Image (tube, rainbow over all chains, first blue to last red; front, side, top):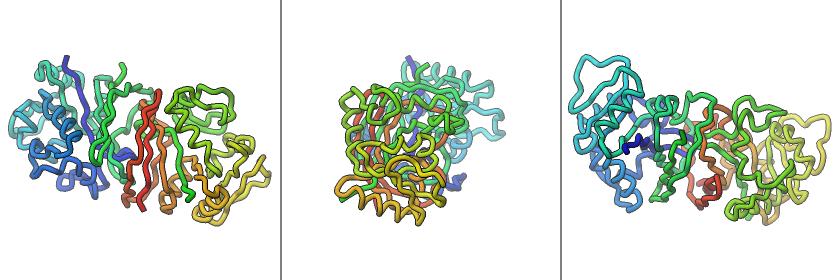
Length: 197
Length: 197
């Protein structure tokens, strides 16, 4: 059955960008270090990022075998929705309150009736494949709504000190996790957790 | 040579307590889950906490083989400086701007001339053993002053959502870490990092 899997690179102190992130500075000041493990490839096409390290390539390939993508509008606009094709032309779902006037490139689908609906539509589109979730704000929405199934955290051995946190604005209720896998790649520790319901 | 080693249990979202921590609620609301891996023992004496899980016991024993302790005054007062004996009667160093009027029990030494001096004195007292550092605020002081050598993070598979963060109030300068060991114990992933100078 299709699962919603969050893929995010995070510093040990919990940041997914450096400070001052914005349209022309997506990873924030100095945040590139978080994606260094992906940078064996070249260019802005995510499919060109495939790492040469075997462990990192395994995790990367898993993410690229997903059948749909959910991303936040903020992130999507920063990267122009990967020119409409994150990988293999799978549909890109974007939860939002307001559909932009200008249609973005490719198969980008805005969902205005809530995160639960967005998740349902993405799972349906993905069929028996998983759904890649990307973006901190949308991850928090999914966690609050209890619709996130799995987290694959790429933990980077650095303290950024400042920036945008992956886990923020959550309620005081605990969300228990089941460790599913730990893989040490070159420059990154991949931690996979199942989110307990 | 003696090293300053931070030992802290932290949730995946970076918290070392739940919300509302205070003198009678040291781990905050619901924060006990962070120390569950230590709770095979009994009572308030840290030396009675030795876990039954072999991996957890290994890490615990390492922490208890340290030759001195540094802790924050806030934490120390919460636990009455472990009645003056954290383990084996090793001295407990407490960086502070103000020495309390009442002398705490045991070999507690207040250091008022800065975190660097505190670290030096603790290392001297520990001889060829390492120094256990405990407490978020003091850890941040050591990180800012670049006098922390090693971090042993006991990563707990839970999102607390709210509470006191281990890594906070740091500057925007990156602190790079060298992964030294990953040990999966029962209910906790022990991540050891050397802090690059």
